[in-house]
Each structure stands twice: as structure tokens, then as C-alpha cells.
Image 1 (cartoon, rainbow, N blue to C red):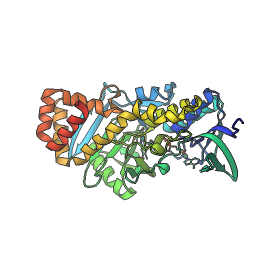
Image 2 (cartoon, rainbow, N blue to C red; image 1 turned 90 degrees about the vertical axis):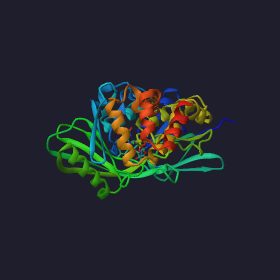
Image 3 (spheres, rainbow, N blue to C red; image 1 turned 180 degrees about the vertical axis):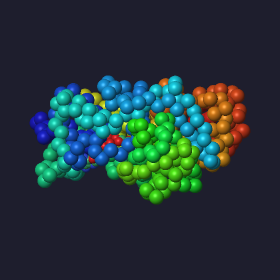
Image 4 (tube, protein in one colour; image 1 turned 120 degrees about the vertical axis):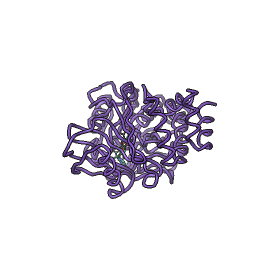
Length: 378
Ligand SMILES: Cc1cc2nc3c(=O)[nH]c(=O)nc-3n(C[C@H](O)[C@H](O)[C@H](O)COP(=O)(O)OP(=O)(O)OC[C@H]3O[C@@H](n4cnc5c(N)ncnc54)[C@H](O)[C@@H]3O)c2cc1C
């Protein structure tokens, strides 16, 4: 007897990962439903909006979501500021809300149904995927869970972060800035991202008070001041992939599956591609091969490496990072091409330069240096 379902694919969440998954599955001819708990796609916006242009081209062709190219970046550590050129990088800032809406639009144009303002409650009963929405019980052959950070199931690796939008009273810095202070932010850093003339997004891990300490330092070093006009607190995922619960008819993609760069928590591209692959596989009735396609042979392979790079970062003191920054600054090192997404490539390039590698070996704890070398050069 043929199996019959209300939908072949139900996608939980209309973030980038969910919409990309839905678009692919619908394009392959599947009957797809996306369920979104909020009443507007892309709102609330909990994002800095930094991605690489090459990464972005993997999830959307339309470049109108790009706001600007970022041409420089400052690293603030131990009261010093090192500025690096990003001219050769392809780091861009996007309008995140617009991206989410455009991707949902593509999913709908491909034939997906989209329900807003409905919380999806998923349950498997007698081997059948059930999704309850607004008192209705729906069955689905495949579930793609793209519900974001609240579904991320690793105990470690979920960091509350606060980001403010500041109206600047004096001046404007049109590069990005990163503030390192291991005592305040042991696993991450504070950040500054220019938005529009006179507006900037500034944030850090932690509650609003703790993040404000980063704001103060960043503003002091960039010689800026201003007034917060918006504040958001949300979880960043930086604990690496979580694929243990993926099965032949259920996968977790995007933040839910830990598809973010563990070094920064950035997940638009890695999660978006994760959604896209899930949708394609559901379209071919091959969802059971997801872990193989994404983690063994796809971008997830680099994410697993990046978790280990983050471990090295955690070993470094502010003094060691100050010394590393001095070495890199002296040699005018900066990101090129897709190194903003694949940090391992930048670090590999540095380690392959004998003079630089020698200098780094002098300033890094030897355990951290040899671990990094064995990870990237073996
Ligand atoms: C402060 C901050 C700054 C960031 N900056 C960057 C950055 O600069 N670059 C970058 O690449 N990444 C950044 N990120 C991370 C990025 O925002 C996420 O990785 C990305 O949003 C993940 O996409 P997603 O589709 O997996 O999940 P989300 O975008 O979170 O979408 C999940 C969707 O599912 C919906 N949902 C959840 N549960 C249910 C349910 N039960 N039923 C129905 N709907 C549900 C939610 O409402 C939401 O719309 C940042 C994150 C934070 C917190």
C-alpha cells in the first residue's frame, strides 16, 4: 500500500536554512510546507550580517542584499589597536532581513506553502513524523528542522550574546573591529560592524551589561561615542556540528544542527548550504545520506576542523594574541578570498610561510602551536 502523508516535507523555521531547504525540495517536485512561529520572516533580526561574497553566492544569486564591502578591520587587544587591510578579501555586510525575505520568497515561488505565526511541535509516533500546528496534526515523510539555536542540543557551545545598534555622535569607522579580552569573553570577542553613516552594530557575548564593557573599549579605541537605539540578546552557536539525531527522515540544519563557524558563530552560509543540501536530498528521497553528504564530503568537514581551531584560540592569553597580532601586522597579513569562511585556509597559509611560522612558534604556547600545525599541515 502506498504511503500517504499530508506533506512530503515539513520544514520547521523560515530562516535562511529552512527557506533554502524548502526551495530545493519543492523544486524537485515535493509537496513542501514551511512553518514559521513569527509573524514576519526575518524579524526579529538577530545578526551582524557579515558573510563572504563567495559564500553568499552559494545561497542566493541576487546581490541586492549586499549593503557594502568591508575593506578594513581592527583588532583591539591589551589596549593596542592593529588595523589590517581587507581590500583583497570578499567580506561583505548584508541586509539580513531582506535576505531572509528573499529566500522565503524563492521557496514560495518554487511551490512551498508557508504558514506564519504558527509554532510547530514535532513528535514521532509509531514511526510516523507528526507536526502539530494550531491544534492540527500533520503527517510528513521528511522533517527538516531549521528552527534555529533553541534546538541546538549540545550542552556546551551556546553563547548568549548582546548586540546594540548605536547612533554615533561623532565620526564613523567604516571597517569592522574585534575586541579581545579573555577575562571578560574567554571563548569569543566583542565586535563592531559599521551599518550606515552614523550607525554601527556593536556587541559581545554576555548580558547587556557585560557586552557594554566591550562597547566602551571599542568606542574608546576607535574614538567614537554614541547612544544605543536598539538592543537584542540572542544565542550564538559556537560548539560545532550536532548530527547525532539525523536519520533517514529527519535532519537538523542551520543553527539547530550547529552549522556555524565555531570561531565566530556565523551561520548564514554554512547553515544555508546545510539547508540546501537537505532539501536536495529530500527531493531525491535520499535524506538518509545527509551526514555523509554534508559532514563527510561537504562544508561540514571544515566546521569539524574549525572546532579544533577554536580550542587553540581558547588556549591563548591576551598577551599571546597581542604578540601574534604584532607578527601578523608587521607582515601585513589579512584575509583573502574565501578565508573569512574557511579560517583554516588563512591559518594554513601563515603556517606554510617559514619566516612567519618561525615567529609564531616563538610567541605562541608550544602546545597550541604544535596542535595547530598537526591539525592543518598533516
Ligand atoms: C548577535 C548575533 C550576530 C550574528 N552575526 C552573524 C554574522 O555576522 N554572520 C553570520 O553568518 N551569522 C551571524 N549570526 C548567526 C546567524 O544569525 C545564524 O547562524 C543564522 O540565523 C542561522 O540560520 P537558521 O536558518 O539556522 O536559523 P534562524 O535564522 O534562527 O531561523 C530559525 C527560524 O525558525 C523559527 N522557529 C523556531 N522554532 C520554531 C518552531 N517550533 N516552529 C516554527 N518556527 C520556529 C524562528 O522563528 C526562526 O525564524 C549571528 C547571530 C547572533 C545572535
